[in-house]
Image (cartoon, rainbow, N blue to C red; front, side, top):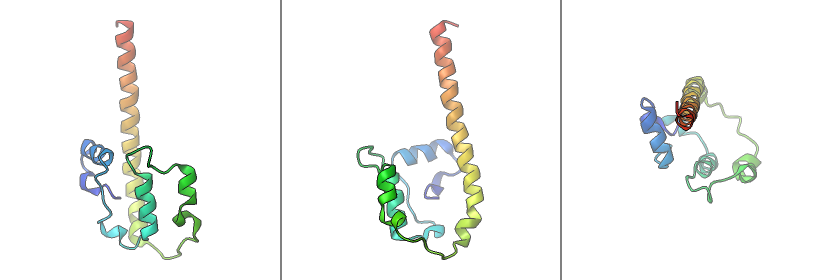
Length: 111
């Protein structure tokens, strides 16, 4: 994924994403089309006013064209690992949100 530089440190990873500090310089991106990369950039735009919404994404050139049938073996091989890491990151965010709500609730009740 484009966030590979901080894959071993979740805080640095989230900070880099929020600063829009990422790139497509890993070898797994070499065969990905410019249109696909542009769509990802538009979806990852930190400025909410500029970031693509669902309608804009579906109208993007990359979504409108017929998909390539070219195999992406390196990407497919890494997909399982990326999915695992993405789930871990999602669970960490969910845990933090719930813990924050719990602590806030306890503070508000005076417990």
